[in-house]
Length: 451
Image 1 (cartoon, rainbow, N blue to C red):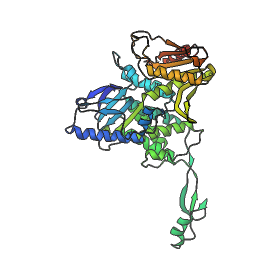
Image 2 (image 1 turned 180 degrees about the horizontal axis):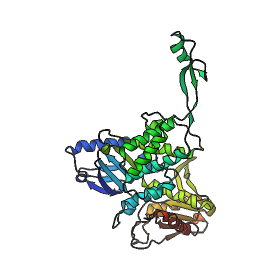
Image 3 (image 1 turned 60 degrees about the horizontal axis):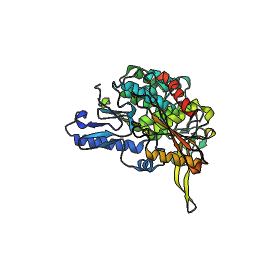
Image 4 (image 1 turned 90 degrees about the horizontal axis):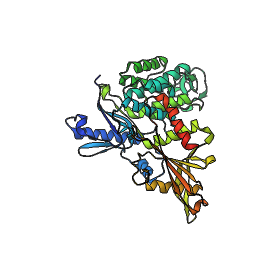
């Protein structure tokens, strides 16, 4: 199988069309590519924008894709990271914090992305932490995604085969369950076979919709994967589901499956199936030219990761996310909606994540924008809090050590005590995944406990 043309770039990075090794009709290719991206944009369902800002509302209502922008000579990545493969050409987009690395280590980059996703709760992309060490052995982004599915699914189905009650309609010599009257009249009474019944009942079946979806997903991934380890795991899933019917499934079928809330691991598998089925189309003639798209908005990955990490490692702080409210009233109506990323009420601390790279501190502002400072001051006044923490991702291979900066703002609205807004970078990258928990914990402990 011929490997696809692979283009790697970072958020907001630009590539000329010549790097695509243009087909004879580049216009036709780009039209098809943009149409595919529009379809993915409309069907995206493993995440949804959470912001209530004007920009967030604009993104939610947009009909055309916001993954890339296209010009006459090339295309530019936006704020979405991940992978898109279309007609034998693959584009991988990595977080901008890696952009200035002297020796890019792309395998390490996507491994770290999976680590962040393993914590995320609002972004619907389940990642098993137990699989992260093995994922780090993969050199291919798409194969790493397939491994996450194959490893987790094989592990769960081996330990917990799933059976479900499903409605069955069939002709029986005696009534079983309830009588399907319309079918009985049409197929039995009218034809003179009234002594048989059209029975509706719900037996406990291994051949159920959930297992059929999993079997189909593993089958199409088997057609796409060239990695022997992945293929072995996918074949094992096929073997475990050998008694399950073969059928074609679509993403909408995943919404028809009803799982007990206690089966959270099965829900994770179903969500992974939905992600693949939503964004993967297989070419039977040339699997290498199959189309696939997995792109996530990094602002929400960073925000979700930071909150989930704090919630798991600092439970005593009892953090709350996305705490809403209004800044003002006008004519007996609440106006100017606000939403705090993270609120720690027992410390009277507001934590806000900013997925931005802070620039050199040449003007005393430490790379903090004036609009962000105004926004944090409004939050503090509204909540009557005196402590605000702005968290930024630290750029990889930063030459100088990152230092937290404090801004003190005197205000008559805060009872004579100044508002302290602290801006700090968090290093969320490590080439050794197992060291990340300790690394990030020590940084956040110093900021949250002493902020």
